[in-house]
Image (cartoon, rainbow, N blue to C red; front, side):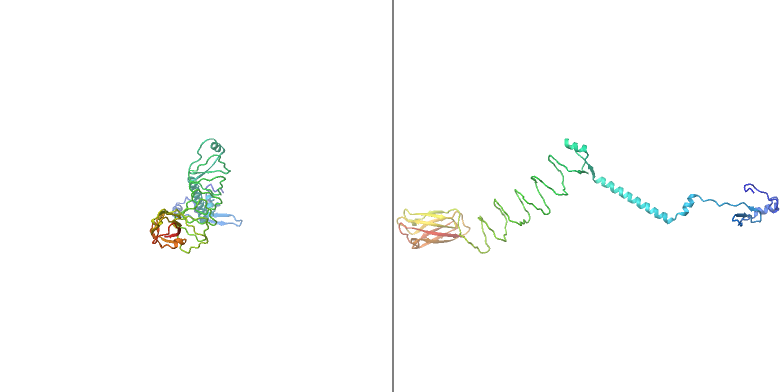
Length: 341
């Protein structure tokens, strides 16, 4: 039986379309659904529900490949893959952006052989301020090197010859073995662990504190202030300019006077002449004026001076040695003096 050709049902007049009543009934009623049965051999048969003949076998409609693939995929799995794709995309975008930013700030540039030859023969400019010049091998500069901006050294700086610096600022610790400095200015505290040797003297404008002993062959100072005791294990030598000595009337006619020493201490020698009267033998004028009237100690030398009744007149500019009784005629004697402010 060919399912593509319409078959006439001559055996059963019930299904005949020639019956007018049957035709009207067909139009008003719903066609009966065919029934599907399986035979013993497993084949599927379609039978007319009205009891008619067996209908041809219906083949199941094949689904498309896209629909089959859609049914096999899980919606949650698709969401997971979508999140993975978005994350990878974000990482790629951020990586590209960071590389672009790095290239915008500083770019590196290596010297080629031709660039090195140009540097050796001519005055050329390599790169710009935003680029970094990288030299992998050692570099030797036969001429002078000028760095117009800051210079940073990551390793050790070794200088084989002299190093000339207009100014040097060191923020950290510095260790120097042998250093020659023409002028050294220290604004803070200077701590020396070893001995300090100064050949040409030291000038200190402010106060100085020495907690240990000071050993010096000679100390010259304008003023010495001692807050403690003064211990001297040797002689005291009073040096300085020799003051001026003037002869007085008490030496008599033809008498002379002389002085050796300084403003601090000295000796006076007197030679009397004829008919010496009472009065002053000598007037001494200090080479430097005292701030106040000094203290003067006068000691007679020899028996001739001891027999005299002498006294001292003093002031900030000098002193005089006088007598109330006339000295012997043709006598030589003297006085020692010590002056303390």
